[in-house]
Length: 410
Ligand SMILES: *Cc1c(COP(=O)(O)O)cnc(C)c1O
Image (cartoon, rainbow, N blue to C red):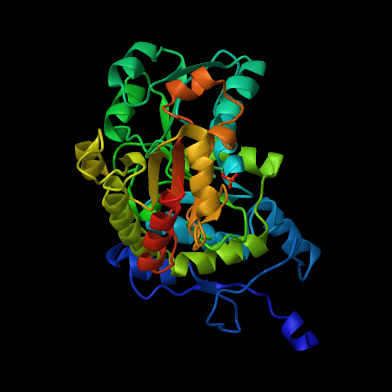
């Protein structure tokens, strides 16, 4: 860089053509939150920098005092990461958003930033495995009591809530059984004792379900999934009110440092531009494949939230605008049948990721949920023949043919 450009203070100015809230989600995904450097670049700039320099000691002092609203250190904030956060906030309809290095860093921060010894946390049992570890192993070490309930049983939530319940946590649809939990009803139960409802919205994506509008207080994502959508980077996001940020989250993130790399934030930003197109296509294929699988020989059961035979189909249609990009199926022949089926697939690949451009299949009993006892798995509805299929961007005819030839192998 020439010395002339070095002397310019890169102070990005927000150019907002219209109030983002008046634009369709697809338009927000492309434009919302973009700030441009004095170069006027088209694509969001990647500020791969730890820190920032100052023209004088006094300018540095002013920045640190908060009198000059610039960036200080990338553990606190970074211009590229800030664009990613702002775009996510404007899609979700949240006041603020903070990015993290992974989805688990987001879940962990959303919980730990607000609990202390003596508090109670109430959660639905069907959670991502690492979230279960935080609840069952980590929080009790610090004197936080945890209760797990069947999330779709509202009576169980009501019975388990306590005056000292500080946080309620749920995922919906759940992994891997695609149960639907009534977010509005659980929010009411949580708020009856002043607890905060945190919703892990990964399976629904920011486009198909809006937990904040249903009464949730905090939404978390693993942006590793649909937001990146191309299997490249890990990332996470916590979305909440400015009050929650000021009271709990900001200081926790700044001091404990689960910051996302600006490079990964940049990849996520570019992923958001195509999120609606990808989710639309993947969801259309998933809905079609669910119907095909439901009638197929060798398939004992198919779970897809928008199919009429889903146990909570009506609730799914009430709180989601689409059935999502995942299908759960149970094949005949238990583990052996499931393995023969997976090994026979030629287009769909065996992997534990989801929301990817590539269709991926997982056998939860031997991977994501292998650490649970068979009894605990049965309680979660995870049988040995159960498979989770994340539908990708391939032509649906090719996916249908791949599934059909693999079913023939069982
Ligand atoms: C993947 C996932 C996580 C964890 O995200 P990472 O980015 O892998 O840390 C948390 N919750 C759900 C529902 C997930 O699918």
